[in-house]
Length: 196
Image 1 (spheres, helix red, strand yellow):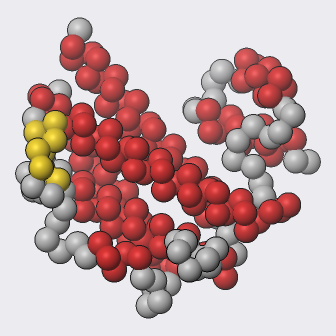
Image 2 (cartoon, helix red, strand yellow):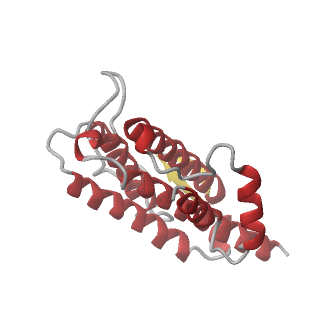
Image 3 (cartoon, rainbow, N blue to C red):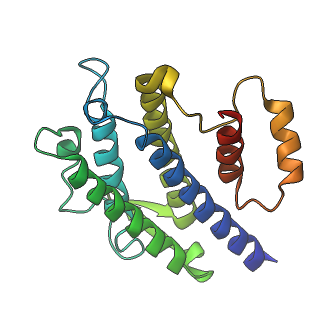
């Protein structure tokens, strides 16, 4: 019973991370080159900064997840908030490196690993708590990416969720399309059909 609960948790957590990545990338696809590096004001982060920070965080936390501190000695967190020397391509590479570290580590966790403890900045975290912390941090920043992308695209934004005033139609669409891989895929298809 406990093994099944842990396996379900692992499967659901992997799916949530994959969907947050897909959500962010669907927003990033809509952002023009000049918007990618634009901050709303002096105290705000640009999409580029958020991509760099999240990629750096995921790489640090998930590389050798079980055996080394999640705050790696080679991570310079403060530099993640400076993008003057970066390109969209270099940041995409860091983004992928972070996500690959996450998926490789999380997929490789055994049932027994969920009973272990890991460290982040010298503090002990049960594996489940470290996972929840990383998932919440990721969702927080993905939400920022989507918000900024939607702001910059304005009327040209292609919705990534149920369009306004279409909830009833979407619920009917879901009922007729239970074979969709995931909610986000169904939402995207529904939104595309309704934009034509």
